[in-house]
Amino acid sequence: MAIPNEKLQQLLQEIEAKAAFSQQQLGIVRSQLATKQREKRMLELSSNELGALPKETPVYDGVGKMFVLTSTEDVKQRQAKEGLAIQAEIENLNKKHNYLETTFKNSREHMEALFKRAG
Image (cartoon, rainbow, N blue to C red; front, side):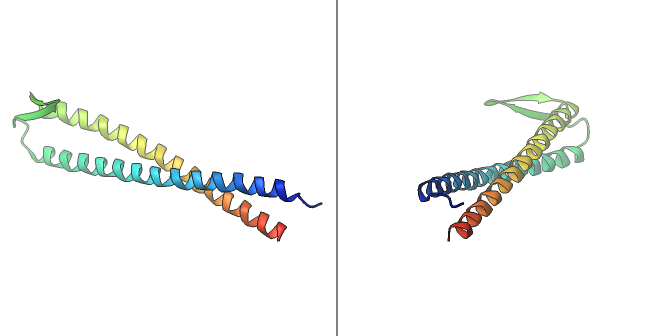
């Protein structure tokens, strides 16, 4: 049983739209992943620098436009919490990336199947 041309064209347009949307979202997710990985790397570098300092070294933490004197332990705890949050965000972005890649791949496969079927 053949699919009418109008329905085939409409179905093809829907699949193309979904593929284009997935590809656009993939670009956004990739840039977000790169940003989060940069943040994670900067946090690791600053943690390493902080770990190399003696415990009695005065450390200033940026709060808005001013700096507040804090202990190295407080800064390490804050950085550990930030590190966990960034890692969770990276994991979520990786899941989203995999989902979007699968959606894009499936859309392409459906389009190819429609072309083979129609032509």
